[in-house]
Length: 226
Image (tube, rainbow, N blue to C red):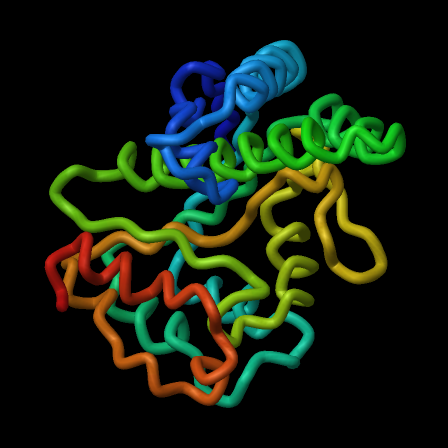
């Protein structure tokens, strides 16, 4: 059975410092114009973001049907080896809503690129914070990390099976023909909960060579697995 969750904006709102750093600004030398820009961006964020979440537990017997997606996954992927060791699996989808995504696009269309980029950055960090909040609201005795289609060899087309099981349309999320979510500021995946050691793996998969973020190493470090 699915569960609907409503986050308050201030629960997932990023700090101004994190938004500035993400945009490449030196915190010791922030021009006054940028201070005004980020204030305006946060004002738009607070008036347009509408964070919503849908979750549903899934058994280890049923999850492979979601994971296989359209059969386009890499031959070996981390989630394939991690989920059998889990104590709990929970599918999720979250969105900041259509209004903020439309606002970002409108700003780009109006050639207000600086403000559009700043608001886009704030929204992206906010969505990431929402995922972290979901991870932290699971069983405190377990270590929970989110894994999403489109990353680490799990093909983006996996969204289709995930959507069939979870039905995120209830909170206003749909898929386009390329399996991208609409609204844009949305995230989906599976929360895998278990002993922290199950999340440890070597980043030597074929897809690791083209990965630029190396977020897996950061997450393992946060769990003291490195």
